Image (cartoon, rainbow, N blue to C red; front, side, top):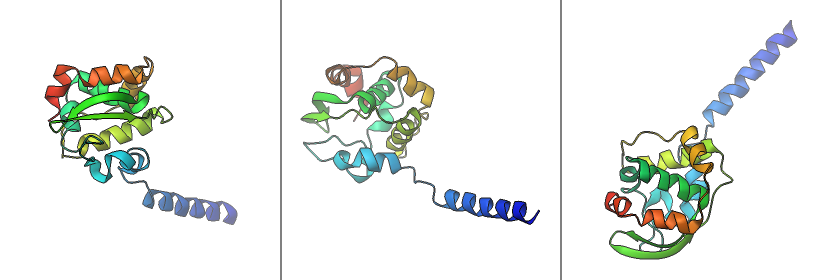
Length: 152
């Protein structure tokens, strides 16, 4: 009986330690996106688009959400408009992320400006993942006039 009690006690301590060390909401973004889009999604003018202040606007409508998910999963290549500048670039695909990890990154990005977009769900990511796009197709989607108008 003492072994059971000690095991339960140790298990409780380990659980408490893992909860206390839970990853911050920015963890996936920090590991996969921040190298280009910078900490807090501020971007690098002329090189990498700013996400803060833009992503929540995109995440408020279906085509914008599809673009955001597709860009994370499939990458993008070509020109995009951001902050009244044309940026020519390449974004790598992060299709190795699980649907949950992709949601964590997307939800963090959409919250950067205090945005009020509905949270991304694993099912939503899985639906986009089921229909892969080329990086050129993702770029074409980013240049859709409704998308460009939605992202300030």
